[in-house]
Length: 125
Image 1 (cartoon, rainbow, N blue to C red):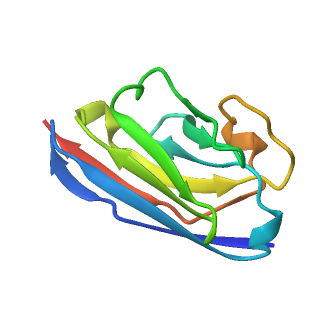
Image 2: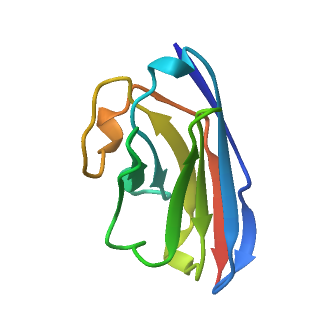
């Protein structure tokens, strides 16, 4: 089992930036890919970014060039830098991990094995 705790969400004006962090605990050495997904009110969950154990990254088209995912392999922590935020980025952001081998590509929310409780990001226009 893996436990995840996100932090760093908040309220920001459009065009601003936020940094999200995710700390893991438990069976962290079994973690392969890590990532973030989000869910806005009344909408389905949406993949945001994935980073594999080899360092390969993938992003949703809606965030490419604005968001950056990174990872501390020693601690198995994952981060998401959010720049040039837009009102449509408003959502609860979840970090998640999979224990299964994952080569490349953006993981769908349903493909993760464990996820955190989420952190709210609100962008005012």
